[in-house]
Amino acid sequence: MTAFGIYTLANDIVFDQLVALLNSIEANIGSDIPVCVIPFDNRLNKVKQEIGSRENVTLFEDTSSIERWENFALQFASLHPEAQRTDRLHPRWYAGKLHRKFVAFDGSFEKFVFFDADSLAMKPIDDIQEKLQTYDFVFDDWEHTKSQDKAALNIPLIEATGMFTQAEIQPKLHCSSFFGSKRGIFNIEELNILLKQMIEQNEAAWVNATAWWDDAFLFNYMTLKSNRSQFNFTLSPDGNDRSGNCANADPFVAIDNVLFNQEGLKPIHRIHYMGYPSIDFTRLSRGEDVDIRFKDIFLHYRFLKQPHLKPLLLKPPTFQAKANRSIKKLVSKIGKIASLKGKLTTSFPS
Image 1: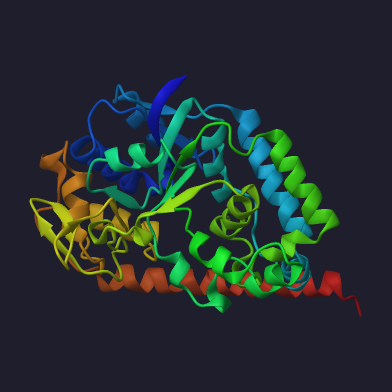
Image 2: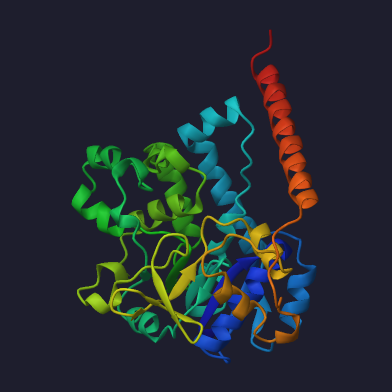
């Protein structure tokens, strides 16, 4: 076993983002910290080639762990009332792939930090390692500030059980894009207990129906029920710990290609490019001028080890490229409508 390491989840679709993340980890956290890439699926040709070029990066290959977590996610989905309803009304894809990130609890790092691939590391994580000496989960996000209708958990429903109050639940809400934890949490026995409670106590409904399929929503249920200690830097009594992380929302200041919170120039753990599709980063890396905040920071880390390949001038997409993309979107929309009609016909025969 290894004392500490970093996990991420990726495939060839997010290759440019993966390279940028790995380079940012090496530059801003350390070149010797081990990193393990969890496969999102089997599209891994470029990912494997990149891993082969880095001494400290490996691929997660425990297929039994991956299958176990996928099955857990699918079993949860089969129990959630909104999942059952929507599964009948329209063909929503759900295969537990995002939930593969939780294999980190089965991996070789005794303690770890998980980064979503659409992130860049901005500072060392010594403070997270320190917090893991005391806490079982460490977060750095503002999910606890969301209104109840947008929260990961159905707070009124949980309160009605008498097991938790809103005051206990709200501060524990968190995301799954960045977290620190420990190996061995959520073992097979614990997952089986959770599934049993979902079945017998209808606890699958504790996950808010607004996005039941979101891995973060299920993760919130798991951490709440585990009743383990957790720390969120955005709730720290030290104001220097409280900062933003979202590229599309929070104000940052760049100093030598490292981003700081604009208010007080507080260091941030990572910048999270949430809300931007992976294809935008592929196009940006090819030299297209894509509307992404802090795209110059992304390009710096994407080509940190290949500066000769970095686009010197970003150009807007051609008229033909935009037309082709519009056609593809239309064809995709028509395909979804046709699939929906087929699903409805099958579910409700005349």
